[in-house]
Length: 188
Image 1 (cartoon, rainbow, N blue to C red):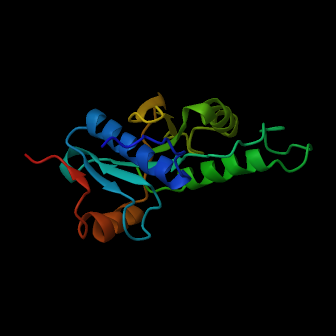
Image 2: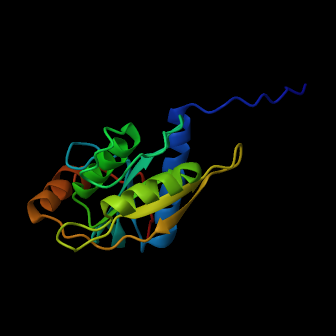
């Protein structure tokens, strides 16, 4: 008996879940012996994926994934102090930038669908990819969705290392890394 294959559109949660796997796979390929946490527990860091390089003893790589299913309106004006009026699209990107800049991680990324990449990249570039102190640049990951195929992730903007507050780093080490087993780890 052969069942008809019915293609149903993915829910936003399914799209984001598939993107999480694509990002985890990208980090697994690009980092040296990473420990990867999917939706890390606790409140020490709000990231969808957290990877710790060098077997859990290296730099923290935090990724926030935003797979927007509904189209965002085109931005009216990105720059601060605009007299054009409130723009929900620009406000969303500003909030994302604020969230990313506040993450206690050495490398910080935003992952978005390929269809939203140009919009988000333009907004982040105009708002500033670099930290206020000049140390660190936000990275951008493009998620290529392939319909029924497996999505892939690729780095569109390479991040640069941020400075991390030692107290916040210690909180992540004690609340997440010491108490939780990674979702993906390379056994040696």
